[in-house]
View 1 (cartoon, rainbow, N blue to C red):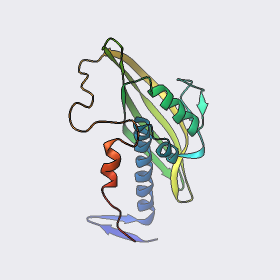
View 2 (cartoon, rainbow, N blue to C red; view 1 turned 180 degrees about the vertical axis):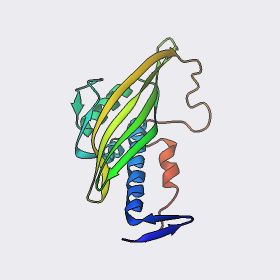
View 3 (cartoon, rainbow, N blue to C red; view 1 turned 120 degrees about the horizontal axis):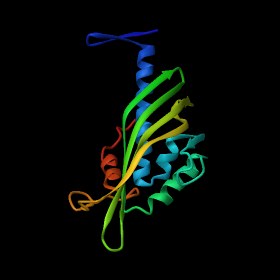
View 4 (cartoon, rainbow, N blue to C red; view 1 turned 90 degrees about the vertical axis):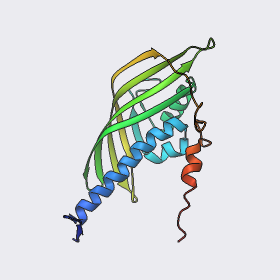
Length: 188
C-alpha cells in the first residue's frame, strides 16, 4: 500500500480512496438537488442505481418508488410551482469499501403564484438517510429515506424571480448548463 506526503500530512491509499469516495458521493447528493431544480431526468437517473428504492413516505406518490417514478413525481408536482430551489447541508458520509451511508440535511423553497398575483412559499425541512454503493467504478444511490422534520407556508414578500442577472429555467436551457459546458474538457 502506497503512502503519500501531502504537506504536513501523510495519506495512505486507503485514506485517499475514502476521500475520493466521499467526494463522489457528495457530488451525487448535490446532483440530486440540481436535477430536481432543473427537472433534469437524465441527471437525476445518473445519481441512482437502476434498482434504487426512494422512500418519501407517500408525499405526493407511493411510499417507495423507483428513480424514474420519483423524478416523474417531482416533475409533475413541481409544475404546480412558479419556481423552486432545493438545498443540502450538514452532509455526513461513512464509507466502508464499496459501500457507504450518508445523512444530509435538506431544505427547499417552493413558490406558488396565484391568478390574483399573490405568491406564497412552502418551506420543507428534513434529512435524507441514503445508502450508496460503487458498481462498475461509479458511486450511486441504492436507497433513500426522507425524514420530514417540519414545513410551513408563508406569504412571499419579494417576488423578483429572474429580474436580476440571468433568467432561470427548469430545464437544460438554464444558464448553468452553458456555464459548465463553456469549460471545455482537455483533449485526450
